[in-house]
Image 1 (cartoon, rainbow, N blue to C red):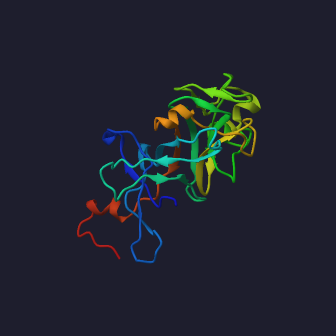
Image 2 (cartoon, helix red, strand yellow; image 1 turned 60 degrees about the vertical axis):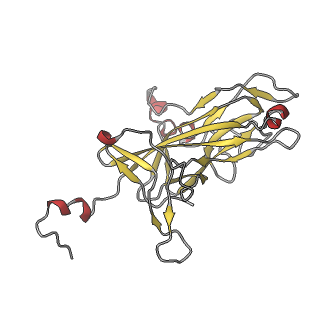
Image 3 (cartoon, helix red, strand yellow; image 1 turned 30 degrees about the vertical axis):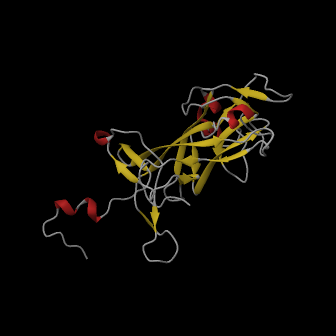
Length: 254
């Protein structure tokens, strides 16, 4: 599922973190969610451009004995914690299209508590992870690595508060390297899902290994968490009648 529209705020009203939660509704009892009731929040920091910041998490509750997990769907938490009609969303989606593309310029991933695993990537889904060398990928995926040995051979340990960041979307070189689109943005012209993956290297296009928590943590009903963030901007929609009706006498429209 993807959002159908977005909520817009202006810098003067920006008093809380942006969030990616949304709710689609069925307006004609067709069984499909054909309208929007509260899309993800964006800020018109620059006239004509909406800026988004989506945050979410992947909970880790499995142990090595129960099998490592190599793919995680991101949970976008609902800001309405006491309203069970507005639940969390499973799946972090960016609603880009060919007319109004979304331009990703930042991705991050962090570990709330430590456990064993492999390279852990937060990035877009293409029936699996995408190589970091692709066009726009350096700024739209975060790759968490570690050199600390884990509990078993071939494993690494990710300490709590470990974090990884995408490349900065700024031109820092001259010549051909200075105009490389890979270092500026990732253009998304269709609805795109972002997930968390375990893989062997940052260029791998298939999963490898996985993540898990210790038996002791599991027995104590504890969980580990990957916390992720993706930031992007998108052209605003064209203004409509509702944007000018307050300035018109009679307020009629054909």
